[in-house]
Length: 308
Image (cartoon, rainbow, N blue to C red; front, side):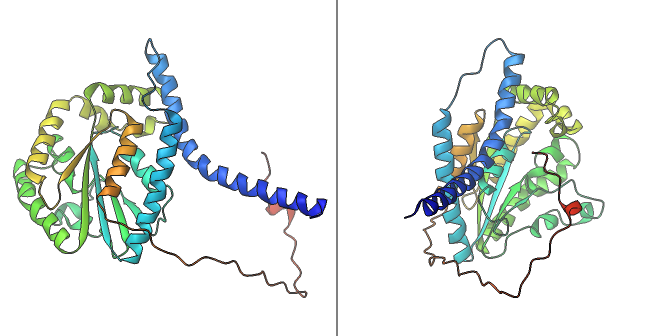
């Protein structure tokens, strides 16, 4: 091999390595938030928080679990399965964080997130479950509900957006609704993210102090802090009425965000008997080069300035 070809091989190797590192940096960018929050915690307390899980172990396990999620995705696609995963919990419990880690390496055409806003005037007159039904998966799809029809048992009940008769009807309807979903072939998994009063207070305080996070703290969230016990009673009633054999609840201890992410993803993978799908090897065809083709130069003013 000539010196020139060795240089070319090294250049290709360096580019491949850079591309791989860039992929891993997607996760590191998300973790920057945690680092910034740790710094804010230090400012707001007299001592540094203890490291709850060794960082290298966390990343090793996260990347391994995300690799398994990719296998799960292929299995769901090949078998035209329909998967629904519900994420519920108090504000700041970490639902969004685990959803980001689940979807991060997956195809958004296969795995999508349903995070519905408050119902509009027309939706408020519909059958309660109607606006959620349109987001259910077709064959070969996974839908992650970032909050779900359980809004009625939580925020709507506590904040007075529905009547107690509405809640009682909801508790009567939900078991039948979910049994119907399961009978139709939907795999339904439900998670409740559990945090303490102290943990939520700290996370809310850090959001107030962090300009990049303040948008996450709505007036509704602030009001909810004064109704902690009401939310607790509502949660207990919800679990009592809707923890059914066909669709049981799974409680995730979420005070430690990193552990909660790993525990939730590992548990989710155990709920589905997925197998690795064999794919034929992909071979890139040779690029066709036409000697008559001449590339048209792009005007300089069309380029984005290279500031970095």
